Length: 276
Picture 1 (cartoon, rainbow, N blue to C red):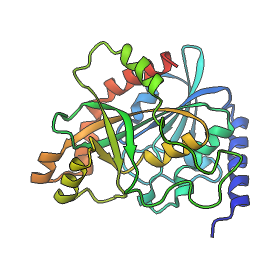
Picture 2 (cartoon, helix red, strand yellow):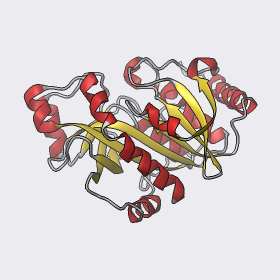
Picture 3 (tube, helix red, strand yellow):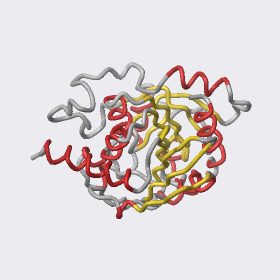
Picture 4 (cartoon, rainbow, N blue to C red):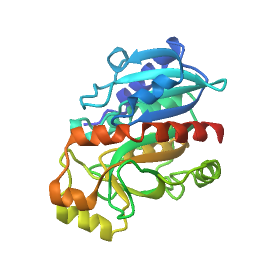
């Protein structure tokens, strides 16, 4: 049974701990998905905190997710990287999956950048492309992170998702991109995982208008929107539907293919920071 009072107390306790570690005045939080950890190491790092040192946090168990918070600086403002996220398929309740998003809100963070590795459904996509997420489909998500008693301190009961991925911010990002050869746009769909999709499921997603599919991100974006945070998102295309239908895919292949796009994602993150 969900204990609302205990949960909120844990959120405030964690936020207090991070402030005591010097995590303050953060302008943007950035979630680094599978295989993208190294991006944080290319910024001016001020402090690194392991997830297992932070009270009330679960442990990330997935290969390619380091499980660290990286407090860094970029062009004279503070940013906070999550090197790895928490997934519903790891066995955590959804309120734990999005726990840090609510902590970020308590820290006064107003902006969020989400990244992930995803499968390409759109036939025009190629491995190594990066898709700017313009919208998402959450119908297949196993549980909505807002289910249960509303946390009134964080947001209203029925938040609108009409601008979950901030259109103005996306337009400013696009206007600063020099080379669109590997940059795409599209709709992201979350599925529960941890198994990859069957051929029939992939074909269904294509019919529904999905451009890329993965096992994360949507709960964080819904929670950020509930908290009034502004969000943009980027999906690295690590495999293509037609090839997956023929040959399948492995997590090792996903991690290897994600690394092909690390430089592109880093550039997009920097453009995002510059265009806030």
